[in-house]
Amino acid sequence: KRGEWQPGVGPPKGLMMISFVLPEILTLIQTRSSLHHSVETLGCTRTNSAHGTLETLFTGKKVAFSPAIATRRADADALEGIHSDPSHPLTLRVLENVPELASWDKWYAHPRLLANGHAHTILAAKLRKTRKVRYHRDLLRTSDGGVLAIDLLAGIQRVVDPSNKKETIRTVPSSLFTGGALPGAAEEAGFMSFVRDPPPLEPDRPMLLLASGLGGGSQDTYVRSMAATAAERGWQVAVLNMRACGGSPVTSPRLFSAYRGATDDVRAAVRYLRATRLGGRGLLAAIGWSNSGTILNNALAEQATTHANDPSHFIDAGVAYATPLNMPANSANLQRPFHKTVYDQNLGKSLRVLWSAARDQYIDGVTGAPMPVPVFLGLGEQTLCETGTFVADDKLACSALGIRELDEAVTRRQYGYASVDEYYAAASSDQRLPLIKTPLLLLNAYDDPIVPGRSLADAIEHAQTNSNIVMAITSHGGHLGWCDRDDPWGGPRWTERVACGFLETALQIKVTNDCEHMGCELFD
Image (cartoon, rainbow, N blue to C red):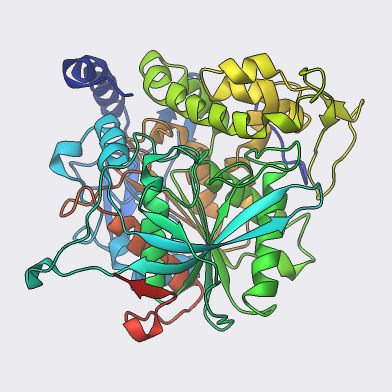
């Protein structure tokens, strides 16, 4: 049962990897071969059958499915392309101004050796190398006594042209899962540093707020790459590290979720940036990856409903990458043997690091036992349930092997849910897409092993009917991979061009590639 809208509320290597991945490839091929859809492009229609059904892998439920625009090539997956009504003004403007979304010639092209979603996900996380950056960190106190670490981009490393035979940027491989928590993530060493002085105030320059995937932060490779790309196009950039993430201090008994509490933190960060960096005016857009994409979608839905009267925290446009739009389905997917071993356990390991950083706030310093701490139901206040407090399951949190165990030990209790399943159903953002009134781009890969294409049916339907949403699905890309064919281990340039192009089109921002007008300083 899906929740209803309630306002406010080390991979195997070598032969081992082949033995794990091959069954998944065969399963994926069999599943894809059973998908048939009526597909329509702008000015061209290709039909396999009048209508198709999308059978979910997780519940067996069949969902009627008829894309308004599911642009498709004969050799591509059934859902690849743009899902939006062509009569929507936003869709038309995007297709006119973002060539990467308007033409197969400019469409995403994956490296040929990364045609499998598992290989793409793992190798992108293992081998990606991106620009060095400098941040200035601001610590924002919250009403519950907590702290949000907001990192303002102060500098990016200059790109050296190899044709000039000068020394190129030297990098080393990032950690296996770039969503790892600080301290200890390999990408931390040498790839980012903090400076004392904030970047100059430029209230007329548009602001881009970034939020990384589950447990990650400003240190992540794809975050640094996006920050550098946006700065080169004239944006000023800030990164919101969710509670306990990115090495931020934990000063209250509260961690992040995918919904309650986290949307309040996003609003607090936006309000702070508008007041301190934009002079109370100007444009502010946001990009969220994976879990932060869920938070962003939920925040935009609340912005149109329960929090519609306070423009101080408004986000003007957004992009959500690889978002688990249907959390019950995505949780069930992670319980499959391969996925649990490779993905869920690694992400659980990252979350245990966060619990270690926050544990003192939940444990009695004298007895060493978990102590009652406030339940938080959102809407900007700590709200009392029946008892007003909860006790974390410290033993389970310290031994959690995956995301679900940590959510049972802490998250669902922290935010007043009776079970993990109730939390996932309530936090899923696909059910709130019809409420969003802000320009939003949803970008997912069909072969994403963590958020598989088969879980996107409801989101696709809502994207077709909401004139403020454009949804793009690529056949390949894995989870937060989208490696470029020409530079597989650099930043995901295609997705960065798409995101910036969408935001600049939606907000009518003039693009600049002039180094004199960059959003931060360059350093060697």
